[in-house]
Amino acid sequence: MRSPENEAVPYVGHVEKIEADDRNNVNVTVRWYYRPEETRAGRQQFHGTKELMLSDHYDVQSADTVEGKCRVHSFAAYTELPCVGPEDYYCRFEYKAALGTCLPDRVVACPIIQMTS
Image (cartoon, rainbow, N blue to C red; front, top):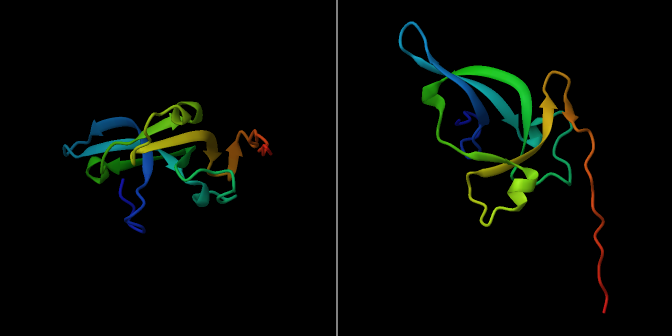
């Protein structure tokens, strides 16, 4: 969905339901993804540029606001993609919007080992 504040960065949501109202206007119920910088904690060093967080924030929007389709993969599936396209994102956290917290609340980090010759 197109963001009115920043046309370069679209909103991303999971369409949960599509239905028409009494006037035949088609609406979608959306569960929103947040970008790390949109959360209370903000973007951290370990967040990837294509990382999203599935939130507990739901909304109903006109189907006319839908710009297109993208794919949100698990982190494991994303790392296995042979070619990452502009429509590919990944998610490894859930964001509790009202509380401003992420689950899980920690990240497994792998140390970088530099080999010397």
